[in-house]
Amino acid sequence: MAARAEQRAMTFAPFALRDLLAEVKGRCFPAMGALVSVGFQGGYAPLACVSYTPFPRQGTARIAVHSALDRPDTPLDVVRFLLKHELIHVERESARGHGGGRRPSHPAAFWEREREVAPEAEEMWEWIESEVGHCLERDHRRECVFVVPKRTPRRGPPRWALYPVSVSAQNQDAWQDRS
Ligand SMILES: [Zn+2]
Image (cartoon, helix red, strand yellow):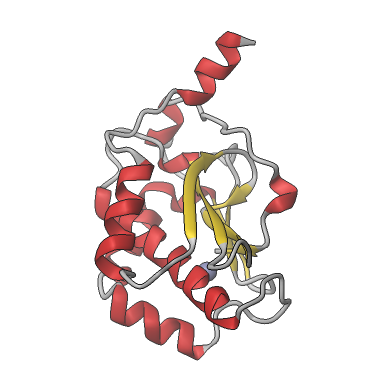
């Protein structure tokens, strides 16, 4: 049991998600009052996603970043970009004052806000596509990019596959808005 817990806590990334989140939240969303936490999640799951609960008061959110990005060479800016994307969801949900609505999660205003906060988006997607693109699956209906961990790359082994996937203990049912 202790060993399992230790395994879960193991990470290969040279960054702490929590620190990056604090940095991005402070710099790009200084007015955000929601309590936001972050962790890696593995398996067949979105590249990044967030769940939001509208209480207490300013709301609580939990961001999950896929452990396909838990590798030593993931650029910090790629993770910062994904966090910004998820924080825009939090910002929008928080402004609505209630959570759990079932409406398109990326309307035009969302992308407008992303261009404002993350002009680097296109460049970040280039890295994501080239490094983990072979195991990405786009779900257009759910407006989401899923990671299929066991998919074989077209040529050669995926570099991230050299590192075992660390699965954080998340209740997958809790996720609502998926990247
Ligand atoms: Zn999204």
